[in-house]
Image (cartoon, rainbow, N blue to C red; front, side, top):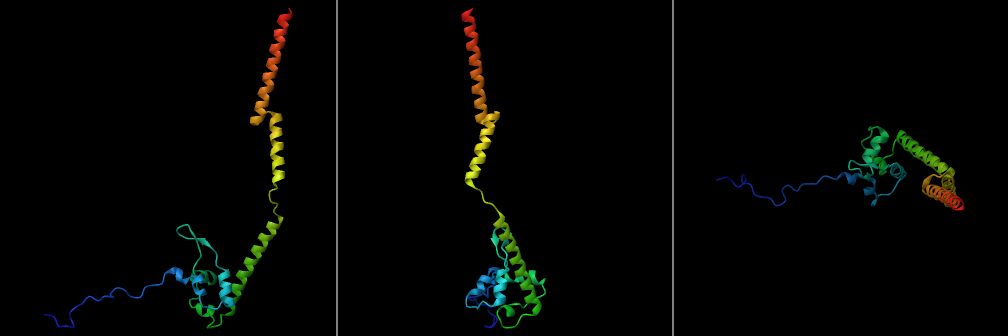
Length: 171
């Protein structure tokens, strides 16, 4: 028989160790609970760009992915900057500033293009369609024009038949 120290007993909590954090817990929305939004964190949330995920659904990248995109993967311990425990270096602040200014310029260009854009005027569109239908009718194109042409042709034939019948009767 084995000594008591060598015997194995079934432990009720075995296999239930500390679970890993899902990737969604690294997202910026997860940090909003109880954390003051400093200028660096606010700047980083502005730079989140929605994108298509592997399942073709829209989603947001994690903070790590956004920081990797901004810094080229150079920075690993950036959370101390975002949480305010340490000051961020000047180059990082310059990168955030440049990215946000580029977004602002891009959105201002879009606003300028929207100001130049002329929305559809329903009355003008109806006038264009009516003029097109009239032109088709007069040219004999389209359903209305073909019916009109057929009706005129039938009237011509009927008149010709009537003249021919009158010519035979009078002789």
